Amino acid sequence: MEAVAVKPKEPLPSRAWKRFKREKVLWLVAGAALIWLFIFAFIPMFGIVMAFYNFIPGRAWSDLEFVGLRFFIQFINLPDFGRIVRNTLVISGLNMTIGFAAPIIFALLLNELFNKPFKRIVQTISYMPHFVSWVVVASIMTTLLGGTGLINEVLLRWGWIENAIPFLNSRELFWPIMITANVWKGVGWSAIIYLGAIAGVDQELHQAGAVDGLGRFGRVWHITLPAILPTIILLFILGIGNILNTGFEYQLLLGTPLTREVHEVVDTFVFRYGVQLGRFSFAAAAGLLRSIIGFTLVITTNMISKKVTDISIM
Amino acid sequence: MPKSIPDGAEKKLKIRKKNGLAPYLRSGVAGKTFDVFNIVFMVVFMFLMIYPFWNQFIISINQGLDTQRGGLYFWPRVFTLENYRFVFSSSNLMRGAVISVARVVVGTATHVVASGLLAYVTTVKNFSGRRLVRVMFIASMYFAGGLIPFYMLIINLGLLNTFAMYWLPSLFGAFNMLLIASYIYGLPDSLTESARIDGAGEFRIFFQIIAPLCLPVLAVVSIMTAVGHWNSWFDVIVFNPSGQWDTLQVHLRRILLEREAASQLLLDQQQQEAMRNLTTASVRAATTMIVTLPILFVYPFFQKYFVGGITLGAVKG
Image (cartoon, rainbow over all chains, first blue to last red; front, side, top):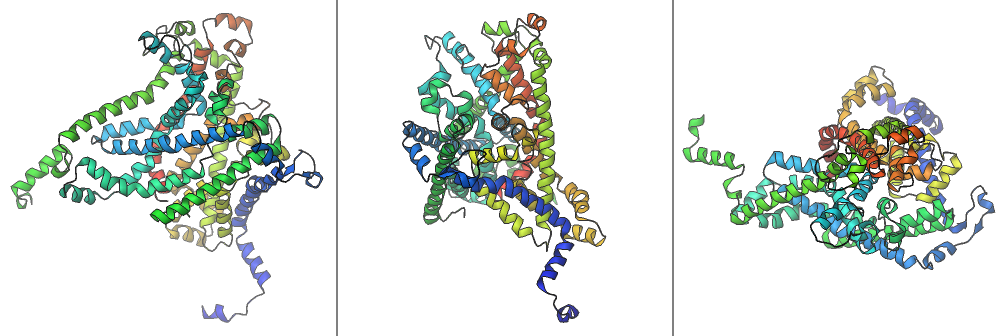
């Protein structure tokens, strides 16, 4: 050790070079990964400035016309703008309330099952829909909810309705059916994380609670729920960040021209204008606006949560 | 030893075993009523989860024209395999299936090897680049350019309408890198140190020592990646618009949107004659089942590894 300390220090560049040579295999992997990251993650990040230019593919950046906020203003002034914002907020609002509460309730109910094999079977089945694609879900829904589908057939047979209900072409039913499908697909999967948190609750707390006279519902309310509250808040904040990120697969698969009024959200708009109609800068501006609002929302929620509950994601 | 336990305690222990719960945790009448409702609810819940799949299944093995008459609830009425025969004889759908499988295999293998190797590199002590790699990849998790700039990039790189779209842009994954790295941190350092002293290269250390020990986490990452590749369809219609690399999901979507009626899938007139009992709905049901079954097949593996995997990543974090 002493010998190393008294050895005269080599100049920095040469030391760095020696170290690099020693680590050359590691740098080979890290370098390849960083180049890949630069191309596929950072170039699109900087590419977002195209929202401020009148972007034309194949033309050099220096030849492009700088238009500032023109496309943002165009997007806001669109006659459809109000409707798109409303749909985005309603759909994500439903996801953040019903879609958010359902897995918590399901996890609490599941936790109250005392027959272990039964509990396992229920849980295993519950997250099956998460693993199939939206295309499969859409196909199943078309079979069940179509004009001659099973649901209509049963309702007609039982005499509950006179004529078949066009579930999938109905504007009024679009949101309820969509949130039902979202819950059906995601409830079991989202419950896993809560079940993990519930499993971490100290059993002695339950024993102490019971001795102090808490019933079963009381223990859920006063012990289990407070114990998983940090998890709930954490996921809620993360969810707020995605609030404008409504998902678009459902809309693209099950939305029809008849339901456009209620299904068009920012994401489907970006896809339609950017990819299908080729209005790149305009679509990029709409997408960027959404990201900025989403980012602001998550920062705000996080700040509020930090003040009120002392729980923060950052 | 048993004699040292007082009689009362032994009795209590028996009661506890019988009811599965300590006496003071057992519930009263309200609790028992709740239990009944809870069990009924769970049974209904399971029915709602399973039946939609079962319904597709019986439609897929029932004669198409017969299905149209309605009243098909729990069992097939006119059993037939012609829906499946049709799908397997349609060259379009078969090509889609082959491309889907190729995408899953290539996409998953490259992603797991690349992300695993990168995860290992970030755990090597004293490696000067480890912090840089971690920080850059974590930053990429929080910011993204969005669909349109990415789409422009793909066009500029000449990756539009290529098979490379299915693995190159998803080669490394920040989240999976962190997941695997956290697992490697849990392994004893002495393993890699002694291998290094014995003169093993970094690649050899990863593939022969680290990777086999990381099997549980690598299995989780593989399964999730494979399922993601198998299920994805949006990127296919955006980045492979020519239809040359259409996967099975995209074909199913096309049948769903009825742009491709059953008769259009088969060009051969003679075959069309033989398939006159088919309907678009029955062919769609068969295709849906073919798309779903591989997922059910990986389910047991998922069960085995995932329970450990998610507690390792998500719950801790």
